[in-house]
Length: 150
Image 1 (cartoon, rainbow, N blue to C red):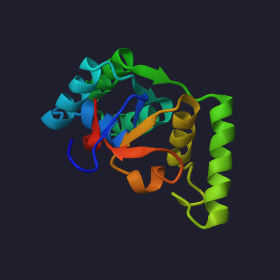
Image 2 (cartoon, rainbow, N blue to C red; image 1 turned 45 degrees about the vertical axis):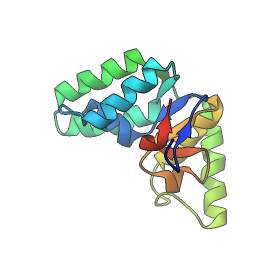
Image 3 (cartoon, one colour; image 1 turned 120 degrees about the vertical axis):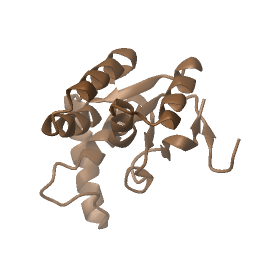
Image 4 (tube, rainbow, N blue to C red; image 1 turned 60 degrees about the vertical axis):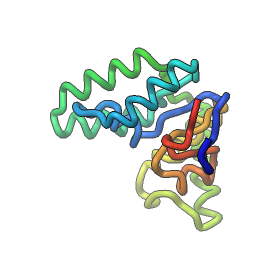
C-alpha cells in the first residue's frame, strides 16, 4: 500500500466531486476502476442526498440528461443516504462551531453542503471519499478517493 493510502472497513460516502466524475458521460477510467474495486471488495458505498443534490443541480443546469441517468443508476447500485432531521440538526451544530472557531467552509449566506455531508457521514460512521479533504477533514474522516483502497 502506498504511503497516505488507507484500507477501509468503514462505509465510504462519496462527496460531490467523485460522484460527479462517476456520472460524467465520459467518466474517467481511474475512478470507474476504483469504484468497481470497492464494490467487488464489498465496501459499503454510499451516495449522500446532499452530494446528489450538488451534482444533480449542475447536471440539470447544463441539460446533461445522460449524466442524470448515470447518477440515478449509481443511486440504485449504491446505498442512498437521505437527509434526516437529526442530520440537519447536527449540521447546524457543525456550522456554528466552525464559525465560532473562525474556520468556516463556506460564506455565511451559503447553505454549506460540506457540513451537511459531514453530518451525514457522522450519522453512519462513514469515511468521506473526496477531493476536498481540507474542508471535510475538519469534521469527519475524509480521504482523497484515490487513497482509499478496499
